[in-house]
Image (tube, rainbow, N blue to C red):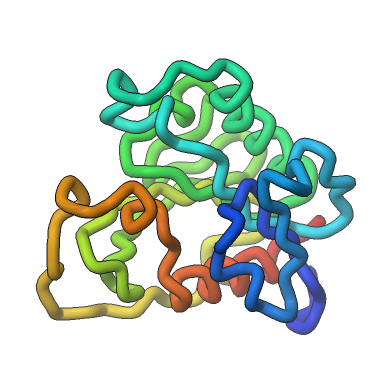
Length: 180
C-alpha cells in the first residue's frame, strides 16, 4: 500500500488542471506526454473521453487521441490507481473493463459516482475503474442534497471537463490506497 504522504501521478490532465496545485501529485499534461510516464507509483488517469463518450459522433476524429484511453487502461493495470471516464464510456467494452459494481478477473472494479456531490455545477455521472486496492479501502463519497446549477449540455467544453477540487482530492486519496 502506498503511504498517505507519497506522491502519485495524475495522467492526461489539462494544462490548467487542479492536480497541478496539489503537492502530493506529479502532474502529466499534454506537454509532458503521459505516454512517456515511467510508472513506479499509482496514478489518477483522465484520458481524453470525447471519442469514447455518448456524444462521440460529434467529437473530432483523432485516432492517436482515442488510443490514449487504451494506453491508460494498461497503465492503471500495471501501476494501480483510478481511471476516470464518463458514464457509459465505450472504452469499458473495448478494453474489457467491468461494468459498475462489478470486478474483473484481475481484481479491478468499477464504481459509478456523480461529480455533483463534489461540487460540479451539473450532474456528471462518472465511471471509475480502480485497480490495486479493495473496495473497502475506498473513502466514502460525500452526499450532497442540492440541485445542479445547470446541465452538462449548457456548459462550455472547459466547464464540462473540469474536475472539482474535492473530487480530485478524493481520487488522489483512492490512488494512495492502491499498490504500484
